[in-house]
Amino acid sequence: MKYMATYDLMESIRLTNAWLGSTAKAACSHPAFGLSMNPLLQLTAAWGEVTERTFQRMQAKPDWNINSVVGADGRDHLVDVIKKLEKPFGDLIHFEVQGRTEKPRKVLLVAPMSGHYATLLRSTVVSLLPDCEVYTTDWHNARDIPVSAGKFDVEDYVLYLVDFMKLLGPDTHVIAVCQPAPLTLAATAYLAEEDPEAQPNSLTLIGGPIDPGAAPTEVTDFGRTVTMGHLEQHVLQRVGFKYAGAGRMVYPGLQQLASFMAMNSEMHSAAFFDQIVRTARGEAHEFDRHNRFYDEYLAVMDMTAEFYMSTVERIFKNREIAQDIFEVNGKRVHIGAITDVAVKTVEGGKDDISAPGQCVAALDLLTGLDDSKKASYLEPGAGHYGIFAGKSWRNNIRPLVLEFIDANMTHERRRMDFANIKSLHAR
Image (cartoon, rainbow, N blue to C red; front, side, top):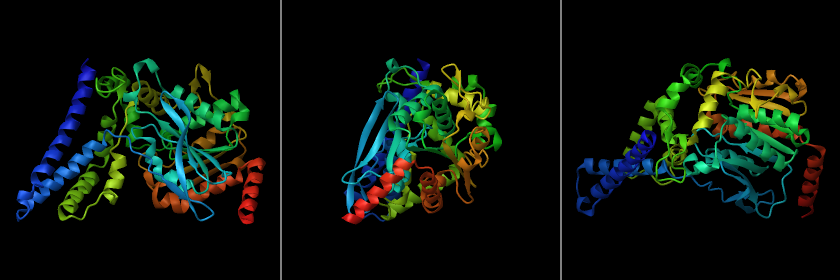
C-alpha cells in the first residue's frame, strides 16, 4: 500500500500545482485590476497561466495532429490514423493518406518506450509521410492497463515487434529511434531464425544503446552503478486508485520527467522564466515555440516495472545485446543470424544520451551480414533529439535514410514505384 500512497501523493502534488496556477491566473486577471500599474499582478497571472498549462500537460496523451499531407499532385490529402493491430500494451498504427496511390516505401517507425508517448516522433512522421507509407508503434500508458493483462518486459517488447513485422510483410523498412534500437535488432535476429521470410528489407538504428559500454554517458553510468534493489525500493510504485491499472507496479512517468529535467535544470528554468515574462507582456501564444516543445516534453507515460527493470539489468548492466547473449522465451537470439537485412546506424556527434559509438556497435555484431549491406553515419553537430527531429534530421539524415531504403528495396516494390510514376504522368 505504501507504493499506492506514494503514487497518489505524486498525483495530488500535480493537481495541487495545477490548481494553484489556475487560481493565480483567475485572481490576478480579474477586471478590477485592469487599470493597475503594478507589474506584479501581470507577472503573477502569467506565472499562473504557465504553471496551470505545465501541470495539466503531464497527464494528457497528446494528439498526433497530422491532418493532411501534400501529395505529388499538389493537392492536400487528409490523413487518417488507423489501428492495424491492437494489443494490450501497444498498437500498430498506420497513417493512411486518403486519395493517394500507395507509396512503394513502407516504413515501420519503432517509437521509444522511455517515458514519453509515441507522438514524440510526430515531426519524424510528418517528414516521412510525403514519400512513404508510415506505420508506427503506439505504446500504451501502463497506468491505464489492468493488472489482468499480465506482464510486459523486454522479451514481450521484442515479440510485439515480431508480430508487427510479420503483419507488415517482408517489404518493410524498419526505423528504430533511440531506446528500441537494441530490441528491434533482436527482433530482426529472432525472425532471421524463426521466420526468415518475414524479415524486413532494411533496418535503420538511430541513436540507440546497442552497446552502452562503448561510450559512457550519465545515463549509462547510472545504469551501471545503481543496484536493482535500490531501483525496486526507490523508483517503482503501484498505480493509484484513479486509473484502470490500479495496483500495477510501474516506473512513473513523473519520476522519469523529473530525472530528464534535472539533467538540464538550468536550461529548463530559463525557458520557463522567459515564457512567464513573454506571457506577462502579451507576447506568448498558444502555439509558440515554447508551448509546442513542452506540450510534448511534459506529456509522460508510466512504464511497467518489469520493462524498466529488465531494460536496466539486461541492456545496460549485463549488456546482453552487446555481448550477443540475449534470450527470448529461453531461446538465445543470435544477431549474427541476420544475413539478408541491410542495416544502417545513425548517431549524433553531441548526443549526451546515446553517445557516438553505442549505436554503430551493432555493425560488429552482424557477423553474418556482408559489409556491402552495412552502413553508418555520424551527424557532427546533432544532439539526441536532433538526429530524429529538427534541422539535422530534415536536411541531412532523412535524405540519407531514404536513399538507404531505396537502395535496399525489393524488385517488386521498384516495379510498383515505376507504375505509380507512369500513372501520375498519364494524368
